[in-house]
Image (cartoon, rainbow, N blue to C red; front, side, top):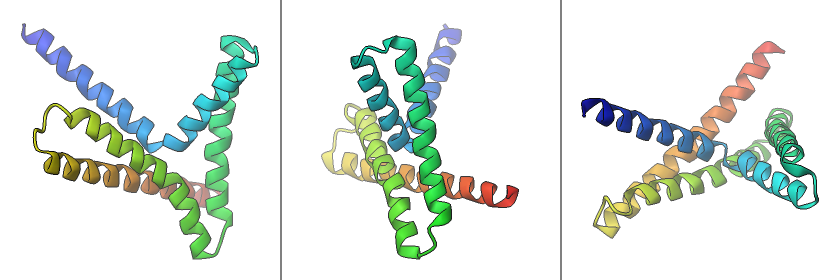
Length: 140
């Protein structure tokens, strides 16, 4: 019985980590899904659609990182950062809302938790973008 409880906790933690990772990379993930869906609808098959989606994800994230590195005016850098962080914040909000829908009876507290969760995921996306940029700057 204890083994099943431990396995359930590990599974829940694993799903939360997966959902958090997908929320942080919301924009490239969204572009991946849409590109793969479009490729599949055009008759490329499952493998071809998967490859198209993978290339779209790498290109989208790479383009955002390159734009963030090459753009020097702070207002344009902020715009690129918001393009990355806004979908991540919305995905984090939706993630927390889905988890707390049945667990938190008060609508006010649920909204507070959702806003905090969305803000946390948005800031985390910015930190990951900055970490990627700094590691690229150090290697160059």
